[in-house]
Length: 289
Image 1: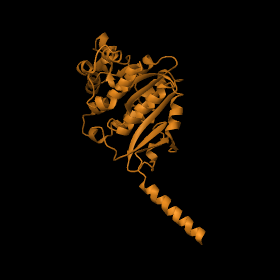
Image 2: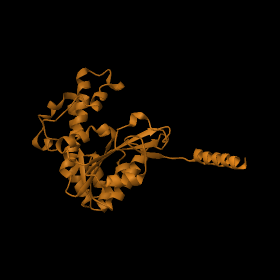
Image 3: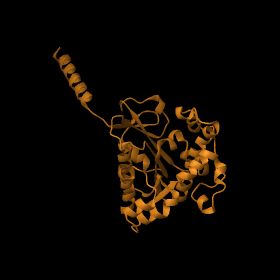
């Protein structure tokens, strides 16, 4: 009887301690099995390219981006790629990383996101400190907007220099990819003119294609390229991943995505196969903006 009572007491104490434990995030693999950061790092070291899908204002995703990059730097030669830096700003970014200009000049000369200082500057400064090449991988936003308004054909009138900042045309495009199909069914798309609804996934695709193109251009032998992008650009092995594999199917690509949930201990079946690793973040974690 006393042994049984002891068991009950230990069980209650364990449950109580577990209930008090607060976890900001939990890592899972594609099938929903819990994984450790150590496992993520081990797999990341084997890749040619990492597509780190973030929620742009998620503090945990940004923190893990920095930690993973820092830990990988001690094991592999790196190149860092950013959705958040546009291709026509590459020379300015190079000048900053090489120490030729300061942050004030970068702020003036480059189009930086509003959350650059809190969320991306630490990574760019890490690259600067460790002499790591930085790839401004994304299409200049104005050209993606042109595609949204007029389709891929809107890019045909660009100058030779402008076209050098975009994936080579004609742009490969599979309108049946689930991610692109889903975009046309989003609530805010319902009342758009049909032409705009048709062009929205094309505007996404031109970003995906351009980022993939410049990832491949920046990739060096025996280097690992870590690319930071919004999760939608690489979820479900589509987007950037699809374009990379189309050109170079032998490429070893590791995908990471970020999801927010009421409990990091409950893996929703909707997350299955969204990425090789899913970062499930408590929805109450403070946003960066």
